[in-house]
Amino acid sequence: MRQSFFMSRLRSFLIPFLMITLAGCHSSNKGNHTPPPHLKAMTVHYADATVYTSYATQLQSENVVTIYPRATGYIERLYVAEGDHIHKGQPILKIQDNDYIQALRSAKAAYENALLEVRKITPLVKQGIISPYQLETDQSNLDAAKANYENARINLGYTLITSPVTGVVGQITLREGSLVTAGESSPITTVSSNGNMFAYFSIDEKQMLQLVDTLKGTLQEKIMRLPPAELTLADGTLYSYKGKIALGSGLINSTTGSLLLKAIFPNPQELLRTGSTGTIQLPKYYKNVLLVPQKATFDIQDKKMIYTVDKENIAHATNITVGASAGDNYVVNDGLQDGSVIVIDGINLVKDGMKVIPVLH
Image (cartoon, rainbow, N blue to C red; front, side, top):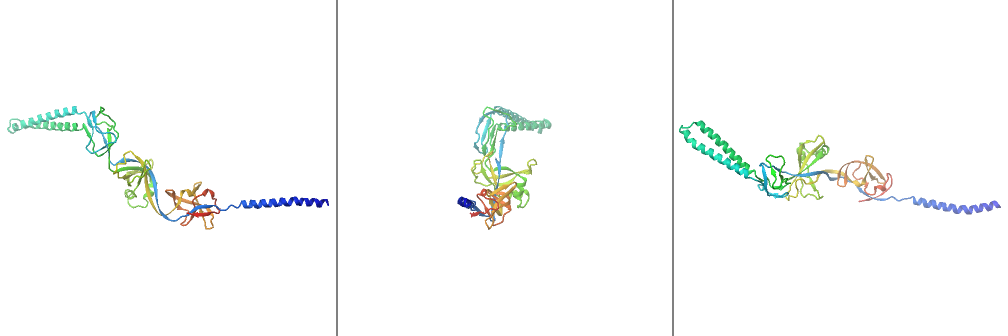
């Protein structure tokens, strides 16, 4: 009787406990069932692409003339300032010419005297009064005096320095009153012409070979057949004209393994100046390639990976081989096929083998 009472009490305690436990288990099982995530995806197809490679550059005028003094003296006057636009033949500076004027007068007088002497002696030689040897001597003196006179005239001209080209004045290293010496190694200034501008940049040998691998001809001919380059200015704006690529040097630098190229840009508005910096954008055109967004890829050790989605909506971590960058995309060399579906957003939510719901864009 006592045992029956005990079993009755035990059942009244265990039954509610088991019901609560089973309910908790059922609730727990429902909580563990997470629906597959909806993720942005895309289908990759073959398409044409343009890949731009960037190179730092510094601009230089097609014709930069360095101005050196060819006369000695003090600078009497500067006619231009740094950055001025000047025309061919326009004065740049004047060197004091008093000594040169005096030298010219002396040389002229010596020349006139020598000429007079020859004119005086010539008829006497014809008459046989004076030896022809004397006429030869006086003629030699006349020739020397004439040369000295011409040199003095030329040296006087060196005191006025004019621009040999139309362009822009560079930095002027001297001021009025400064002493300049003929033949000194330091230039007074430079004048950069307003014609084409050269944007020099270096490219390593491997990149250079990749750029020209589909072109025909010699290396120089291949480079000249490259598509026009674009120039991004220092403020980030894109220059409105494109540049033609040419060799800057025919030799590969043995230290860096790079080749010097130049892009030749027109400069009708004179916006580009010697010494300015920028970035060359060199395009290469690809036909029938697969492109994937860079943000859709991730790295595992030294491998580039991407999540592909099969017909059952199962995500697979797929190893791909990428080549050049095309904007925010990679050119895929291997690992994907035309029509592959890839996850392009939320890849941190995906694990290999899990089910997803691709939302195609």
